[in-house]
Image (spheres, rainbow, N blue to C red):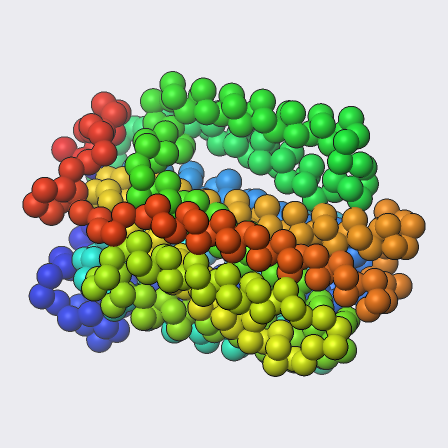
Length: 501
């Protein structure tokens, strides 16, 4: 059994000066660590490629990070339910700091990609466990207010991250985009260690290592097939078919293993709840759009529109500013009008932004591109944040880590798929234009990049339409299991029942 010794919810004031304020601050600092990292890297990509080379490999800077995050998220979520939130959160922040230090000293694109994997393993703990902690200590009504505090972290990261990325790239060097994580990580770990307290009763558990391995291998092969298909080999080649087939087999075996595991890393009851299915599906689509665009909006701004890295960073910041603005106000909407209304509103706004983005070309103004990113960010905020809250509300404490982890897992998988799919679109277009499977960014003209990235924008509009369709499936209200009339989706498995008795 794992219990938290944090102050109970109820009458205590919500805010940094309240009884639970130090815990909220610790989560905000930890969230800020990878929030800045998610916005600071994109603007430095041209400088990194110019220094280390490997234009066709640079999408792996995002995809390997996201894949590591995606694979580790459900494991961290399960371990947090079994062993407590604090040790896993400290482990995640520690890994992220170590990975950042190694990235700063990377000597090649391959080394940088490997060290980004270490960062991703740390980020896999920070996001879901931070949200789980807040779900533990705040009620549904209070979470509507707390979302504003987390939104402020992302808003500041949206401004600080791209600006620092551009400034570092043009002055002291891109390596400082990783070194800047060190003091923030140290502050986050110190605050967590001193301020967050919980009591954990030790009990032996059986961790699903086989399931985690199958998930990792299957996901890696799928991503490799998506990223390199049409570039290193044809989509209909034996290599592509073999990779896709192997991924399907491994992921199929993973599902079978999870049905028999005593304590599965990703329990299949997650896929039997309507609320979680809708929340996870919408999170996946948001991930596809968000990270796919984050990879190519700065590149379009610099190489096609001719801006500097700092300006390109500010364009991307418009998207990451729109998200927290929506997240900060989403609580009032879902408390008054319900979760379905809020997600549908977000989906509709995302489509509007995607249609604006689809009209951007080489003659467009910078404000045109910025407006499209801002509107899409607003849409993301009205979909993703309420989706996490709905998932947490639908389950009890003993399942909250898994439910939150599954939601974050879906978004991470979507982000990795987005980078891979959009990367395949752009690389395939550029390779065909240059007649080379290994194009160098220094030799890619704006005339070649413009139509390639425009294809990304058009595909984004179709994905946004799918997001709106999924939003209509969300229930209007979600009843907490501990509230009157609330029930668990099914009895807890015997292996888990004694942990919450």
